[in-house]
Amino acid sequence: MAEISGVSTTDIDSVDGFFTTQGGSGISPNSLPASGVNGTLLIGNGSIPANPLVTLDYNIGPTASVSFVKIESGVANTADSTAFLGLTSNGELWYNLQPNVIWKSWATADGTWRRYGTDSDWDDIAVDPDGNCFAAIQSGVLWFVGYGSNGQRGDGSTSSSSSWIVVNNSLTWASVSLGMQKIGAVDSNGHAYFSGRQYDYMTGQGTTSGTLTTLTREQNSLTGVTYIFCGVYRTSLIIASGNLYVTGRNYNYKGGGLVGSGTINGPTLGDNSGDFVSIQCNYWCSMAITTTGTLRFAGSASYKPRPDGGGNQSTSSNAFDVIDGGATGYTYFYLGGKSSDGQFPAFAIKSGQLKMGGGTYSYGVKQALGYPANNNWVDVGYSGATSAASSKYVNAASW
Image (cartoon, rainbow, N blue to C red; front, side, top):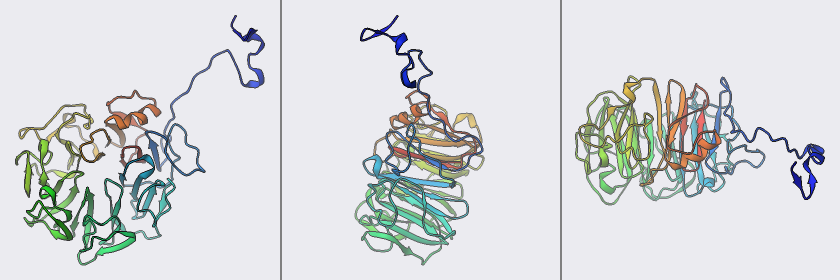
């Protein structure tokens, strides 16, 4: 018989319901909302610095009833500097700012989801990868708030703004993207515009130096542009008439195999498959969704960014081959990361099921959900997912 300080455990078993020698079921991982529950929640790799009135369990925050069709995220240095914007299907603009977000005076930064204003005519959103500035389109008008010294405002000024301001209403804007030190936008005519730092031709103006402060159409005057993505590190990608164009760094052929793997003075045709709908890239690779719901991949798979578990496609001959055996049903993909850090999580939605993979920053989330801490892709929550966004420390998912 076991003893504690010479006293048999049979004499102290279940004292005041506090102590027992009978064992137990242990600690179980937390679960996400049950099937049929719609909303958006935060999942943290470490402690989420959220609203102090809310008690977090296994670093999974409470579900907000609002559901988003698009989420954008950015993070500076720590978990409490993570920033999110969310866009609903009926045009509402929402945000979730952790307490140490730098440009936050326009918001309440307490780690909870809050609606911005009462308007329901927002069209698109974008967040700088560092979380230092935000852009949004409302009824075709481009708005901006935050750090502007790199020319991201696009209105000729390099000043920062602590509140949302209109930076361009001379054109009707359809979509916007914020990359590291640059902004890109598509107007209603299907033309692509950039402003910001001009390293490695990343603004498509035929130069590698200086700062472009006014949104300017790219030098090759593409037409039929439907999508623009400002990469996290000196790469900009444009989809026009279903084909992919690249300007800036094309390392690992992440902008397509029809041009070289170096620095491209573009936009230049990188892939002419004709079925591109949307695309995401980080320093190492790109992932694109096609018109039939398949995934195309290009670049290095070293940090397990591709949900089929496959390897590199970083040559001119296999860049943007269809992956996952040509499986369809993909509606969403999000690649986190900035600079050369490839350890950020990645999200994919396939037939409504949210999947999570990527580098080591995803391990804490996987463990909280009961999975091993590794690079494998896992299912997150129940079916019906609409969007998700990953940052280094805190992630958001919506159903």
